Image (cartoon, rainbow, N blue to C red; front, side, top):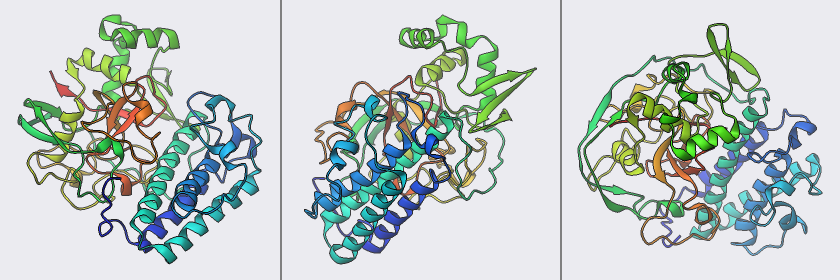
Length: 428
C-alpha cells in the first residue's frame, strides 16, 4: 500500500454498490442450506460455512470500521471467534458461534456501517482502499463457498444463470516470441495485492502455448491409458501424493458402463468432452503433460502470453476493456465451465482463448515474492504461503470479474484438487 491512487480507486458510490453486491452474493451462496449443512463435516480443505460468513463480516469490520475509522468492536467476542490467523482450523467447528440469525445480523450491521462511512468519509483514500480490499476478500470467500458446496455434494448455488456457452474444441498452439517481458503490476494500478508488486523485467525464451485449456475429453484419454498407474509419468512428490492419498482417478468422476460421468454439485452428468477439465491438482496436471509430451507454462510465460511485451502491456488478454460475458466466463453467470472454444471475443491478438475465467490455470512456478517484496497491512495474505504453494493464473467461472487482471496471482498447495483449477500447456 505504498501508494494510493485515490483518483483511480472506484468512486464511493461504486464501492458502496460493490459492498452491498458482495454481501448479497455471500447470502445467496448459503441461504438455501440447512443449519446442519452450515456446519458440515470436519475437513481440512473447507471451513464450517457458519463460521466463514461470520469471518467475512469480522474481516471487514476489523480493517475498515476498526482499523481505519477507529471504532469499537461490534462484538466483544469477535476476535476470539473469527480471527483466522489466531484460530486453528480444526477448532472452528468447536467454537461457541452465534446463531445463524445473529450471524446474519452481524453481516448486515457491518455492511450498513461501511456503506454509511463511504457516504460520509468517502474522500479518504485509505478508507476506499481498505473497503475495496474487504470486498475482494469477500469475493474470494464467495468462490470458496462454491467449491465447498461442490466438495460436500450440495445442490448448485441459487444464482441467476444463463445457458452454458457452446464452442467445441480449440486445438493448436500459438507462438510467443522471446525477449524481455515485465512480470507483475505497474505502480499506477489503483489496487494490487502485495504479491503482485512490482513489475520487473524477466527474460523469456520463445515458446508455444496452447490456445485453450486441456479438455475433459483430452484428460479422459490419459486416464484410459493408465495414467494414474504409471509412475514414470509422475514427479516423485506427485507419485507419493497419489499413493498416500489413494488417488485412482479424477476427483468427482466415475465410470458407468463405457461412459464417464462427473459430479456437478449434487448431480451426476455425462462427461462433456470439450469442456475444460477442472478439479485437478498440479501433480495430476504435470502427469498429464508427461503423458502428452507437453509441460506447464511458467508464471512468466503465462503472463507474457496474456499481456504481451513492451511498456503498453495489455491489462486483460484482449486489451483494456474490462471483462464482460462475451469475453470471459466469470461471476458465476454460467454456474460451471464452458467448452474451451467458447468466448472468442476474449482472445489475445495471438489467439489464446479464455486466459481469464472458466478455470484457474496451474503454472510450473512456486509461489514466491517478487524482488523487493514488502507485505501490505494484512500481512497474512501472501507472506505465510511463500515457497509452499504453487502459482495459478486467470480466474475461474465463479471468480468475480472486478478483481481480475493479467497480473493477478492465485496460490494453492500442489495437491489441492477440490478448487476450480485446470491447466493449459506449452510445447516442450
